[in-house]
Image (cartoon, rainbow, N blue to C red):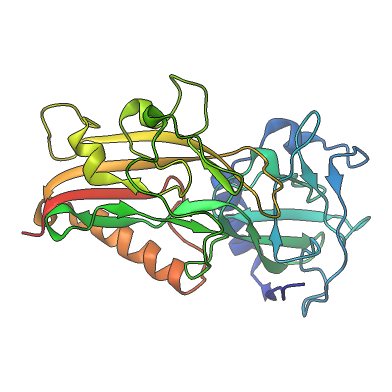
Length: 302
């Protein structure tokens, strides 16, 4: 079982109110989960306990949770602690679907492959007990790819860990759906129905490895025949992993942008990419909205 980071922060009432409003606006919460979650459903998982250094720090049984396949409905995970204690549950950054009253998570409606803070504020106090929680899955690192430097491949990253080895097989440019490729028993990427695949929009995602060939994407017409600075597309990629998620269907949307050279990229975008990468490599919460990951293609360095 993995260790779980937790801490307790005492805030002035008006600061707590501000933080609550900010987090409440940022979080993606399914309306049904927000109002009521039936924790007796067979899709709700209660996990074994872990210890924390903060009495009310949210405890979901492990530091990494995985979406699981269900026969019907969504997959929920309930916290192990704070049952019967009045208070408010919080999470940040954006992407975790949480019931604010019970702390129950709907992993089917949450962004996977992301590191979150989850918190509990006991009613009548201003103490915010916080834990870190990873929702297992795949993402891509925000990055600027310079084609002239042969920096052309976006590699998937798993479980919010930039150094974790992939469970997927290596593959090459024969591994696309238009070559009848469809993944294998370890991993299957871009496995949506024909017409809904990322490859149908010319984003060249390899089906076994999940690697995106950005140079080939440009050549094949991702942004059409005429390239313009600032062109972008947001494209969903469905996938399955034969890991602790038990091949549950998952999805990630990536944002791909084009500039003719690095010096044409706005400074704010460069700062955003730099900051998110620094946080990711230091296992920190990403202050910017972590999704969609931003893949910037630059033709030349200067």
